[in-house]
Structure formats: C-alpha cells, structure tokens
Amino acid sequence: SRLEMVRRAVADNPFFSASDMEGVRGGRSYSIDTLRALSLEFPKDELFFIVGADSFNDISTWRDYAAIFTLCNVVCVQRPGSTIKSLAKALPVAMAGEFCYDAAAKRLSHSSGHGVYALDGVLLDISSSHIRQLARGGRSIRYLVPDAVEHYIKEQRLYTDAR
Image (cartoon, rainbow, N blue to C red; front, side, top):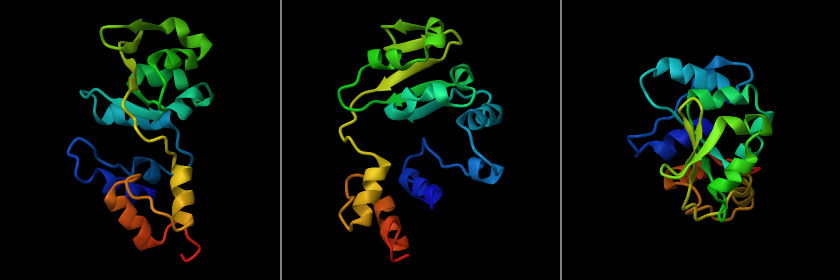
C-alpha cells in the first residue's frame, strides 16, 4: 500500500515515478543497494537521493553510507529553521574532509563531484507517524498529503481498526 500511495502522489508529475525495485528484490532493503541498482539502470542520468533531515542526521548508521555520496547527489529536506551549516555538522566526522562548502552552488561538494543540498522552503513540520496518528484518530489529513493519497487512505481504511 505504500507503493500505491507513492504512485498516486507522483501520478501528475512527469519528473517522478514510483518503482517497486525494492519490493521485488526481496529480503532487507538498503538505500545503498537501491542507489547502486539505479545507477546501473540509468548510467547517463544524474541521480538525486531525497532524504529527510532526521534520516540524514543518522546517515552514519546506514549500510555503506560513504558510498552514497559517490553515487548521487543528496537532497536533504530540512526541518523549518535548519541551514546548510546544520547539514555539515551532521556529516560523519570521518568524512568531513571529503566535503567543502561551495557558496556559489549553495551545497556541500563531495570529492566525487556530487553534492549535498539543503532543500529550503519546507512549510509544514510533519512526519509520517503524525499523519498516521491523525488518520487513525479520524482527523483530517487534508493538505498534509496529496488528495489522491488521502482518498486512497480513506478507501482502503488504512490506519484504522476497521480494516
């Protein structure tokens, strides 16, 4: 059902698509494995890995996290009030020397040529657990998720005891 929600969320955007790559692979899924597969599938494309600030802060706990920066650009969706400087502080100490701040590009440049970008302009401080909690309590999630996702959650009675 998560895949279906993503499909519905990106259906109207020609620049995004949902993939079931991780689901069909079977077993545990790690970001690094998905990024490696995508870089093989799309060798001429520039990849951007979008990650939330909370996840980025824990990136040193991820499997083979250092390789992520060699495969793609990382776009960190910041919580309100965060800056690119907070991203630099979140980088694992062992990797700090591989990055430098590029003021012109407003990014942390990695020695591989890829970069880490902070995505500004996030207006809502929300989390998926908060959305599930609202839906579970019968409260509105309108404007927190795309309309198509809201309708799907209601149709499927997700996050309720009435499933």
